[in-house]
Amino acid sequence: VSDYDNPEMEYVYKLSLPKMWIQEVRISPDGKLLAYSSLGTWKVSDIDSSEHLSFMDGNDIKLQGWKCYNIEFLPCETRFPMLLTISMDRKNIWRVHGNEIHRTEKSILCPQEILLCQIVSQNSCILLLWKEYDQDIEKQKKDWINICQIKIWSIQPFLCRQTIRLPGRIERDNYKMNISKHGNKAMELSSVQYMSDDYLNILVLYNFKGNRGSALGLLSIVRSRDRVIDFTPIWSRYFKLIYYDSKSINHLITCGNGQYLALQNGQNNIM
Image (tube, rainbow, N blue to C red; front, side, top):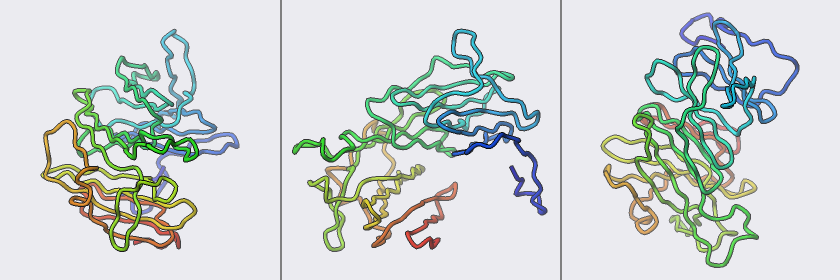
């Protein structure tokens, strides 16, 4: 871990581990905790003391790691740091107390597998994305529902603040991007970026499989207090195509206030 405010870029923390493949790394908002995953198990360490924290499974059994898909630290200003663990059908909120991580009574149940989880720091909320249809095209029925759901959960108080519905697959018709009626001939939603102030702005990225094209667009609407916003019947009115790449867009990132956007295309060019 390096401190980018230090002009000499000195290491402020180095974790000694046996030979193992580290897949992902997370750092808490206060810079005191480090989480990393290996072979489906997440572990959390204290940066100052280099000690591993123990997960308490509810039976006073201490576990050095927790098996889950993902861990995200929550940007809430509380006395004890909090984190979110994501498994197949359940998302649990945990509280760090000393060298122990205790599960709270707060959890989120989801009917489908979570495809994307983001912590929206400027709004202190959690974004969850899932598809209402089967991922496997061969298993989809002819009358499949082309809808994805975005759930916005506030952290304090802990509740679902808003549900946003949008198409999971779209297709290109000249210079227009229309909602697809044919799942196997369409680009599929792969990533979203959520920003909300006076306007509700959602960057949406759709990709063809096999690097055969990507479309980056913006859904923008005057911020609504409605609990549910459905973009599917008003898609052509509110969707604006920002950039189309004939091969692929691999990565997408925005700055904190949403003023700047960076993306990496299939040729590894950063724009």
